[in-house]
Amino acid sequence: MSVYERTLEKFARTPFGDWYMKKIAPRVDPPLLRLTGGRVSSVYPVPVMLLTTTGAKTGLPRTLPLLYIVDGDHLILIASNYGKTSHPAWYRNLVANPRAEVLAGKHSGTYVASEITDPAERDRAWDLALDMYAGYGDYEGRAGDRRIPLIRLDRVSR
Image 1 (cartoon, helix red, strand yellow):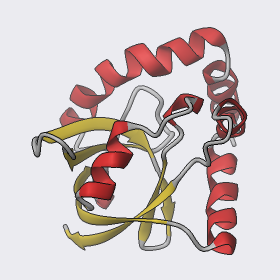
Image 2 (tube, rainbow, N blue to C red):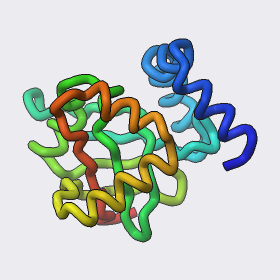
Image 3 (cartoon, helix red, strand yellow):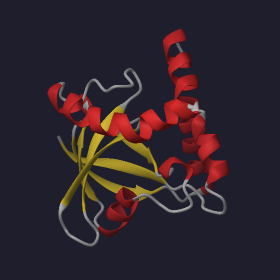
């Protein structure tokens, strides 16, 4: 990691950084990502996508910015919900309707989601998540008994 990336990670793990990631970035990133074709977010160069799911209850499109990991031909999402004891709504939406649209630069397209359940594969993906943002370890501690799901996105089309 560069000095900038280390500083960004340290900031994100502070109370003010946590507030910024929960309250400001979700408002700033959608227009910024749309304007740049999914290439630049408020936490650049950390990879952030716009994920559009279908609401589990409403059937309506739901779009939000999420950090992601590139793993070969797949993208990985971490359903940390900032360490809350419940799963995020986007996770429940993907369980009910696994097809999703992604705006993430060259990774943009239609994807199908599946949870990573194989223990060895999940451990490897979790290590990738911690390498990208060590704060996921903090979230794991706050989540209590909830095991944070890891989601693999497989591309259907561009």
